[in-house]
Length: 176
Image (cartoon, rainbow, N blue to C red):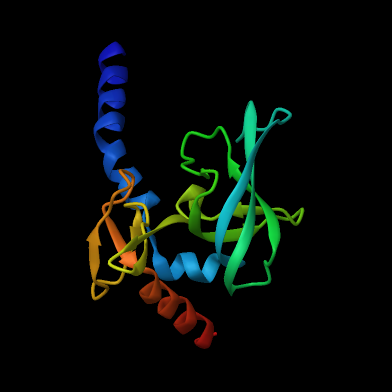
């Protein structure tokens, strides 16, 4: 019985990398279609709060207040608040004070906003040679024909010009 348990655990460990890669990947088109709002915003404040016991959350949650600079999809404008971080094993959600980023947001049943795809819907902005770039996490699948540059963010492998992502968002809105 111990041998069976050992080999089951070993198999689960060895195969977990394959399962995570497949389950965690999301196409940029899916991210765009699934988002209730897509906003370029600056994070102005980070607030931590305790939450009651919840099966997928424990301890603290972090909210971010942000100011929308440009709304690419949905109706978010001006100041807004979103769930920026929860204690959940697969969650990579976060926000950085004074950071400019492209946020793919979903609206929960209670009307609150949260970053899509367990945090992978946050793409920090940076300027390179006078052009704005976003850095999607390595689990976001971009179309093969989209040119990229090396990313500075360790959670990203590449950066892509914001104008290219905007074209993908616009194309997605036209096909509905």
